[in-house]
Image (cartoon, rainbow, N blue to C red; front, side, top):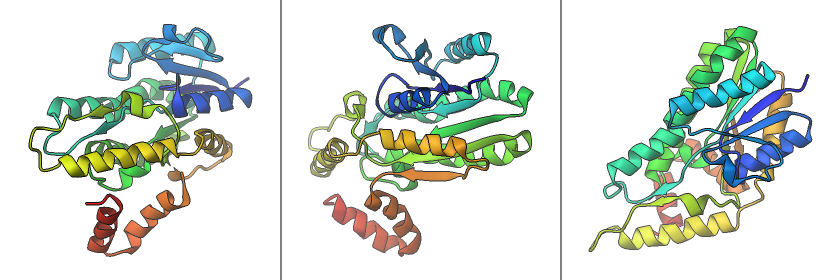
Length: 267
């Protein structure tokens, strides 16, 4: 029987690349979208799911279980981008980002785990971000949401090891996707002390995404992980310098690393 894979946020970007790659490799793939009717020509099954809505999640999981009797792999990819000065980012926007990027994956995991526990088998991969390893200027909320998911995955992994359910994180760097189109940008308040730094950082972020590699690289890494009998905890996918930045944070004195980030962002 084919392995059944659920990829949240599968209508575009990294999620779509993952879904297409795994389907081409023989997996039975279900992607999710809040509005699957907008993608009538999707090459794989696309079901309705909003990771902020528990009823929507339950209905989506039930639909797959009824059709396939199982879910072998969950890939939590659905997420939103958010930028802005920490002081000036509206708390409602912070809550929305955390609701999608952190609470959303936890909701989906809680809906899928009972089915995996029953079979004593499963793989869960959470798509986080290299940004989750450091508090980046004007991306602090996004960094925090992805960092929280990294840590939660470690706890899940320990708790579910005896159930033969394996958890892993995959942290991408900057890839050429349409994430910028849906990103929330906190408005710059009049006379803001952060205006210059925020504007400069936004340009850097957009340039990095535009110059990013093909998201198929993330899909290749996911497929490699699924072939591992004993998958690791943390995987990073991105340019050498993006991955090396995490190593530098461990090796360098804190203030030295902070100065390096300030110089990179022109702060």
